[in-house]
Length: 398
Image (tube, rainbow, N blue to C red; front, side, top):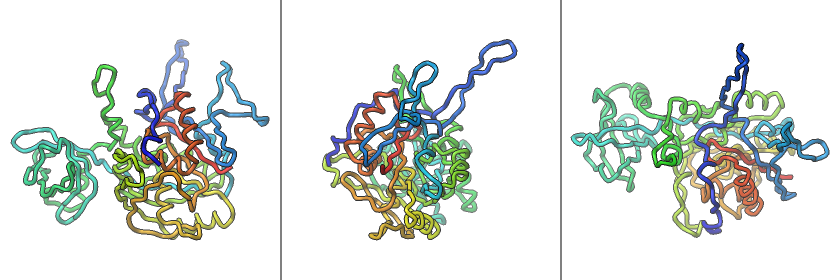
């Protein structure tokens, strides 16, 4: 397929800059209304795509299939909290338990004091303190330059190699135990929100969404465990501790694998022919325990739901020709776009993604191009939110 086939107009106001929240109005002792805003990522809107019947559901219905309306006559939209109506006991959800580290930090260049953004990608060598990074503005950073990261000047890095146009290898000049070094390094960083959030501008052209302390919590899944991601597996962000407890109560299994989500998910595709696009590699791990749980679910004829495009990529990277998940420790650069024959999951929960994004393409491959694009069209029309903090789409095989 062609890149242009995945384009659509997404109004700027429908890009979610913060997690979904709801407002509570409480009267005080004087009879005055006080409004409180509470973050509720699990109460985001949900579009449901039914693959076999080729239908789309966006609103709650009664037993007769009639759309339910509130007291004001407005249709009640489906939310993520309604996902429990689509699954039964002993079905299995697969989550990505990667953990995001504070990858974005800012330093100053020696002599000029120019402010430089350094985005940590991965540690290359613990003993030598070598890191693979991206720098911005890259034109100012050359081999031999030194960058200072704190006021005391104790944390310094030297550029020792150019890897790509923006990529550099840094050697941090910091003499202490490795864990202490990482702790001090990460203390200087901020949550690595996507650029479309931190570069967002208001109507007057001013940046209006800086990273905050709250983002360390908001941009981390509650079940995150294995450190290594530089961006969050966004669908997992919607699952609160209460949601995870409800899964347990309903008897829905939770399986975990690890794929360290990288910036390649956000890189623009620069070729019209999608077969010529190359994805960046991401480290992934699938345990024997996860394989046993997921494969037993399939053997029993139960449903397996991939939570997020990263999980879909991971399972399709290691599923065997027999349709069962295999243990794996390594890397994957799988790029999923239509047409594609899936071997494992029969359902998928994903965010509503940006136009021409690789995650959107994987969604279209799983649900079917025509019906998913129609669902996107309806979601835009309904004013739903897009991006990592946006609303979600559930694709079920019925």
